[in-house]
Image 1 (cartoon, one colour):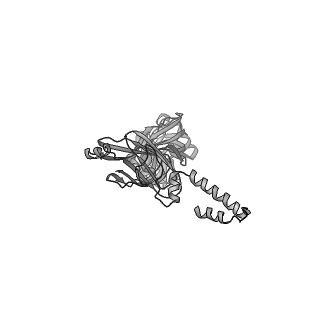
Image 2 (image 1 turned 180 degrees about the horizontal axis):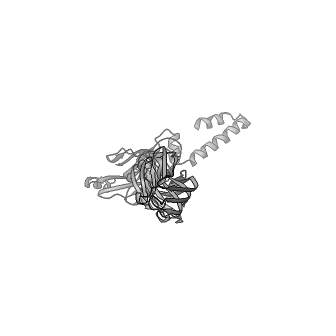
Image 3 (image 1 turned 135 degrees about the vertical axis):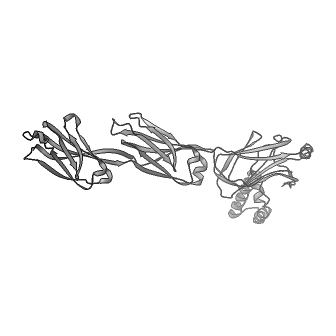
Length: 408
């Protein structure tokens, strides 16, 4: 600055007149001088090439000839790492609707509209019907149904050559369930009237049947579906509560089925269906959640239901505060009484972003808000003999490289 002033003086001519260029230089020099005087102390130190003292609070940092005193004893030294604000957030993840059903589907096969069977010593009426089964794996049963218009004597019904019915038949005894174990892909059903006894050789037995029908009952089901969602390790660490929400739409109101829900192989819900109950919420245990892919499995035993718009609701909350402990022993207290200061020094990554938050020193707040890579303050009056605790509550996300507390 003196060199600039000397140059300005030397630029004045002998007549005492200052050239225009020199006048402009002098004005710029005066502005720079005023700007330097108005700068904060920390920025002046940076311009002069001295160490930065960061931001301050309290009574200030102990200095000696403008320099930070060297620590006489370290009380705390740690590397906290990444720090995030204490947030409470709720997020939702939509899953595809779940369609579960386990139903019986009936198929009717007409064998005859009218059937007149007669049996005597000289006559024996018999009729064979051939029927097929589409899928034996899903077949529940096959029933034979007809209406007896007239009946006298014994009626015989055979399935694949084996007698399954013999006797006088009335409508109250029908329908007749055919043995499931005797049914194959292709089957022969035989209906006939048993002959009269030898003592009734002059008489005959006969049956008049109407609407002879086979009723095939198949099990149609989609009683299992699965959905999945993914949790990262950071998400899992911050999960406070998680639940599944869905609206149950009952497609069959006459069947009360049971819906079971498994999470990663563990049963989390097993209950009878309740239609028109609004939103159903199933809470998950944190012990059942895993990092990575989580699988939800839905099953139903009977009925047809749609779990509409299932949602995974996740409550995120940081539960553990950033806490750091250190001990003040009796000799340390004597040093403080004799004039030593307790200094807190935090260093951050030099990224230019704001690092803001609060240090709670034994419950007393010390705020910080800086875009520099260092924050220093004294903790005089906030420290006690014995164990002390510093709790960090961030307002922004930042990387705290080191956190030190020392006597100086």
